[in-house]
Length: 456
Image (cartoon, rainbow, N blue to C red; front, side, top):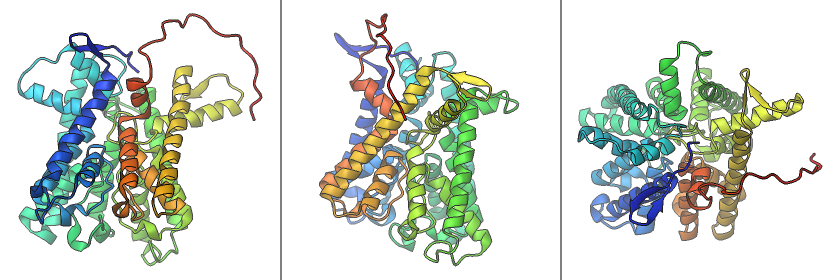
């Protein structure tokens, strides 16, 4: 990660880029909470209460999708547009959106702003960062526009021109940003895309948008410039490789385990079973849309879903979780240990010891956060262990899938998921670097005497 440098915002006040990122997300959530608290944001013009508005705004900015009320049936058009804007800002990152306005106003991007952009996009240097932001914005416009076109053409047949286009816009942005919010309440509250479980157009468009949004902006840029897989940087190779493995693993697992389950895909033909299994494999890692009832899944599928949600998407993307690269580093480290190698090796390259320790740290703290959230929910809420673990993993991975307990949670349960969603979106290390770690160890020139510890 790019070296932490403090930025002077006011006289005698130093603040690090990671702190600005955390504070920026928090401010956006607060603004969204206030707007959603207004009576005009609800269809019945009644206040929903600040904690519910705060939960919804956090879920939108953290592109999670967990909701306490159905998005279509409760929120007015004003409220839905606020949620959509929060999703877009949260998906791209507030610094990317701020840079967009700087472009529009033809304002020069300062050095301190570039430092924050580098941190928010998980880059290693300042070189080319503004060009990357431009490509991110242009790519986002292209991908979302294509998604809007295809989804609108499909939804117009069911809802008319105006409503169909609106639903196309909402779901294209929500899918690309891996948010999982939907406005399909006409078919019933919290139904997500279950009414289109057999629709090829809706499924394929949403799947493609989710995958592209979850790969990460750096990978886009690398794929765009590279002429072959071999020409890609190691980061991009690892992201694509692990993403492919997880998608295949999820698809095969759901297909085989749920094949005869009449509560999910058991009563469908093979074509629909295949499509729905692949859709669940994609959405469980980042997005939160669903075309089946997750409370009807078998326990094995629930456990696999939890694992996929915990991993999440890729660094620098719209997704949460420990990230695919972290999973990849752990996997290749284990393989290297089994082979008796001292270095972690992948694709004829070795990675640094720092990257390995970061991967283990992120995974450990991620597991602790999910565990703490699970314990809190089971202690203070009337939910089972499986339901609590599922909801906690969904919040940390900013996935948004639910077994139906979120709307019934009390104050402590909602606050627990709010904190978990925020940490999952901002990142474990970003939070630690922002408020716990020193900018650098001033006395790191010495090393303690080495001694052996028995492991395994």
